[in-house]
Amino acid sequence: MGKSKQYRFLVVSENDKYRGAFARDWLTERCKESGIESLVLSAGMNVRGQDVQTRRYAVTDDLVRDADCIVVMDDLLAERLRRSYESLHGKRVVCLHSPQCFRLATHDPVVVNTYSPAQAVAHVQKEYALSPDGSIGPVLFQKILEFHLADVLREVKSKYTSQPTCPIAL
Image 1: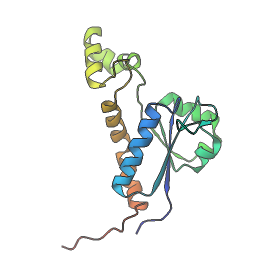
Image 2 (image 1 turned 30 degrees about the vertical axis):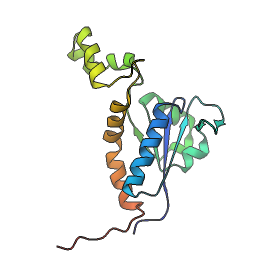
Image 3 (image 1 turned 45 degrees about the vertical axis):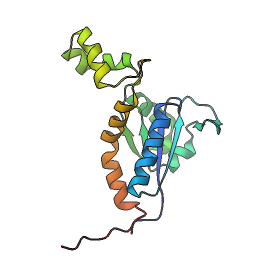
């Protein structure tokens, strides 16, 4: 049987609203499906205080210190965390490299160097599964989460599972 301690994830986004809340809920569901004993929290770098009704929280030193793994949306947030929280040192940080909006995605060097401007727009709309307002849609964001967190979840499952592992008899 794995450890009984909960594995603690902290998902950090700008405002703990859309991507952060989606990632928190997605990660919570994947942990449940895998039998991982976990606590998944989300917080925003631009949130002040907390709003219990909307489940929006500010990043705090306590949240960072208590987390086993911190999931950040992009490189800019990762850098802001590094500068703001000494307790981040030595923590596992997973960066999703998730473009926040259509404008950023169309300026991706791979897209710019591969497609003409008109083709880039069509490619980004299709590949990034964008919402009508230009933000990343849930289909793409789920793929981003799966890509960046699959190995983490496999590793965590081997240590923090609530179900005993039974060897298979051959």
